[in-house]
Structure formats: C-alpha cells, structure tokens
Figure 1 (cartoon, rainbow, N blue to C red):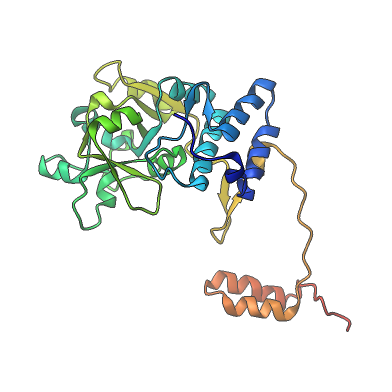
Figure 2: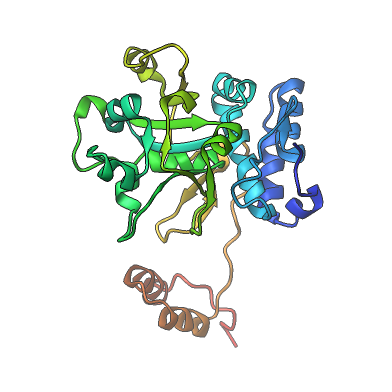
Length: 299
C-alpha cells in the first residue's frame, strides 16, 4: 500500500523541506542517513508505508507530519520504531495509565458504550464527548498527536498509575471492527464502539515503566515498548505560542539572526494591532527604552 503524494507536493512546504534536511544531515552513519531518507522522502521503511489511508489521506501537509513523527521516533527510540514497523502498527490512541485496568479488562470503549455498560470513564473520551453521544474511539496515525494526548492527566487518578500510555493497533484490525470518518481539528478517525483487548497490539509507555506495565497484562500477546520522553523534541513554542524548530534537537549550529531595523511608526502600528497585553508591553518597551533602530534616524 503506497503513498498518494509526490515528493514535490510535500516539498512545497518550506518547513518540511528544512526539517528533512536537518534530520538527514544529523545522521551519524550511512545507514541512519538512508533510513531518514526512506522515511521522509518515500514515506516508508522496509516494505511498510506509514500512511494508514484512513486519517486525512488527501492532505500532503498531514502526510508530512506523519513522516516527521516517525523520523523523530527513529532518531530518539530506534528499537520502538522498529517494533512498530515490524508489527505493522500504525494507529495510536493517547491516554493515561489510570485507564489501563479498565482497558485491559473491557478493551478500549467509546465514552457512550462505557456509560451504557456502567463502566467508569476516568480519562480520554470523557473529555471530548462534548454534549453528544460519542460511539467511537478516537485513533490517529500521527504518533505525535497521540503522544500529546497521553500527557494529559485525569483529575481523578492514582498516582502510581499517573503516566503516559499510547494504545496501538493496526489498520487491518480497525477496519475489521468498523471505522468512521471524524470531522475534527486534529487528525483522527473513529473505531466504532469498542476496541477489544485482542485488537490491542501494543502499549507504549515511559521507558522506566515498561516492566511495571508488563506485570499488569493478562497475556503476552500485547507488547510493551518504551519511550525515553513524551515531549515533542522537533518543535518548541515561544512565549507567544509561535511554533519554532528546535535546532538543538538536531545538534546543528544555527546562525544568530541579524537585528532588523524597524521604523518607530512601524512599532507603533504593531503595538496598536496586538490584543495580547504581554506583546503590547514588549513592543512598548522597545520604544520607551530606545531599543529600536530607526530606519529614518538622522534624516
């Protein structure tokens, strides 16, 4: 099952092209470089393509995010990356370990099915029900999205179980159960009503919790893989919420940007257009402390 997008389509996004170059140039061996190229430029590793053909399959930008998530996983946790590929796992649901006792007993239920069956919901679907019946379990084929949801802790919890978990399955299992399209602001699809324990192929947890979780499992058919961090290491958000590339992640030297000359009138216009007070204050300080180089100074 191949990819629907050409490399030219993906490279139209300048950020994707830049991050591809950063990944490839950060490779320490020829094998690592070739693996990055296969992931980022071809969207596959060995004979397995990352695209699920289920979640937003007609969007090259989203396909780029899928590939970047897998490249990041390969860079930081190569063994877990290889286990996912070789077990054909490409669908992920982020949750908290407080949900594990219920999941390992009843499977992964939609919030409505849990309510109907009298099963307490402590994490996950409860927070996204939004005043309507939610008879599906949300999965994504972008690993970073599932990791993000896994970092959310429930209000009601046992501290010994308060750590991240990503529940994993395959496209094949999802289609056997039943899949529905979900209109959402994140990349997701719905598996109808219940994902039985038999369809849970793996759990991804913090590295230091792997052995602990293995002891909770009812059988050896569910694999447990470790992750050294659930943080997003490719990007970081600055104080205004703007997403920037974390160049330190790639160990690449970055030339400091040269200060831009800004006219005083331009700064005043920026101040008047910003609603967030901290941005207004920051820009005002440029004027009050004369930190702005005026383009027209001396004329």
